[in-house]
Image (cartoon, rainbow, N blue to C red):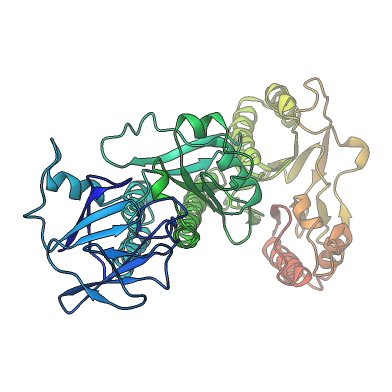
Length: 548
């Protein structure tokens, strides 16, 4: 590889490798070699080309003050071959051409190897093929994993290779809640202290607020922010800052590159290239965020499914077997878990407690309260001889729990005495069950409104009154939660108590009026009414009655 050894001028002592097919020399910061900033030098003064093993030099489109090779002016727009140790001069820039670095003289402690090492980022542009390779490498790193935390540092290192004029690279994110700027990745060239590397908060915040890329170069219009303390203390001579912004949304971070050497200023082309990389990083981060969100949702879904299985174990695993009586139940939670509760509790002397409760609210809080209701109601029913005493005690135990949560529970309890064919009903703010009389198939509300006590958990001192109900052959009691009456049709019409009454009145024979037949007919009526509309509230139905 051929080289230029700078003998005189601003770059004196430097070794410039001629590692590209074409290298432009001049005073413009867009040149491959900025030989001088003096206006005597043309913006694009001369160019050195390499083709088929031969290096040539050409004066670039009638430059100011000419280009000299071995003391003679080069003819305009004519390629002149370069030979080993030819002398090149452009104004006060003088350099010697070497076909290799073997004959280059050392200067003090500076060796040729050290010069070459330092020259790798003296403002010389990375060639197109190398740029493409680096871009493909960055793209591959971003696409091969959804765990970007380990890849972002490598992306930053790739950016330093893509932009050899850059001294530092920052990936800075804005905290969602506070807006604080958090450098996620910091990479510096060489042995610079990354832990103490400074970025310009002014530039970053302007980039975030406007969602526009920023290119700043010392000596040009720096948007009125060139004098900020961070820019001065960090000795920034040129800065690129591009937003990380999704297609729909606001920026959540930036990529900032800067250089401390004014001869290595960034160009508009550099800015466009960096913005392209920023789009790739943004897309990868958004994919990661969506992936994490899906995982989180899946995790919640699995946890709720487990919670549902646990909750179902609080409900009866089967129907009771009581001679002369038949039972039916139906349960459907509006969500993965619900607040409805029903139970069959065997009591001494062959009696059976049938309960149906509805916790105010939905979802996990209601489900947790339902779990407590299950255990507490069983305990109270098994330790109290009378149903009223059991419900009164249950209310006292629930009130300290539900009152601070502003929640309550409605509950209907029926104590069945199959020996005497009698049911004792206790109502704590629950909708009255329906009663189908077997003899006449007349349908009425089983519990008068004036006997219904207050809901559980509101007032620990509430009193409750029982109601005695004889059960004749063919009599059926229908318990239900308000999810049945509130079930919506496709046009938003609720099923209401009228819907229950109409369905129960359809029984034309004794076979149509058994607890199972009544329950199944009511479920079909609900499904027909809803026509596929998901339930707004938990739906619970319990039917039991005397069959002989």
